[in-house]
Length: 125
Image 1 (cartoon, helix red, strand yellow):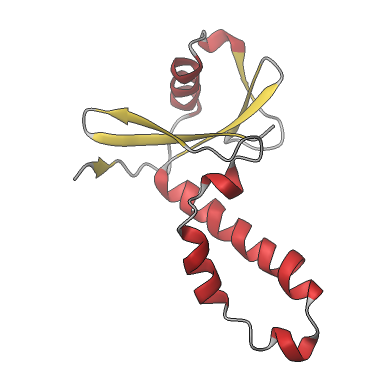
Image 2 (cartoon, rainbow, N blue to C red; image 1 turned 60 degrees about the vertical axis):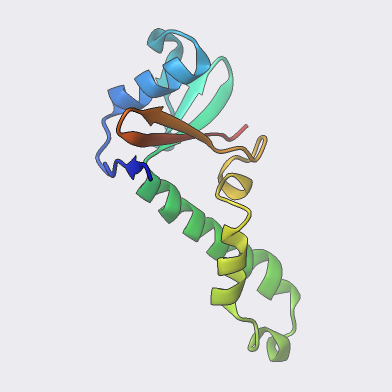
């Protein structure tokens, strides 16, 4: 079993270094987005660089948004009352976070270090 490093306060410089290594480029080629501190741009492409807990939080929010805006908004009120949010979200976890967080390709990239998984990268455009 590998350990998961929980670091909600991962520094911007660390995120840039992780993404640069993942992309095989220099950190000088990566810029932090102006609209989100966890989104980084490289050669016109955008990436989320998250800790495990940050990815869990964003995935949970994405699932809630999907339920509200896509599922329940299309159901009549009398039907939506019977929708089991918890069961639906539990099932969605089986597909993994990449399907929701990596809008470009649906892939979650785990960055490993000797102590276990350190960060997760998602291409978003």
